[in-house]
Length: 66
Image 1 (cartoon, one colour):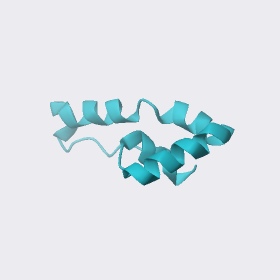
Image 2: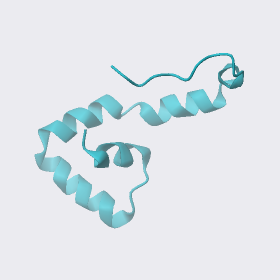
Image 3: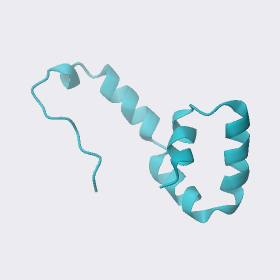
Image 4: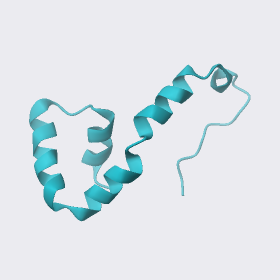
């Protein structure tokens, strides 16, 4: 996975990095595919953050392995 994809999806790139990554994205099919896979990540993180049951401490952390 290209590190820029996750940073781009999460919105943590500065303006220059954001523009550079978008130029890269125009020509990189692998990053385009990864972007599609990660597109819902911010919403999922927000749901976890706002879900009171996710802070119980009883459940083990979620694994991101495939």
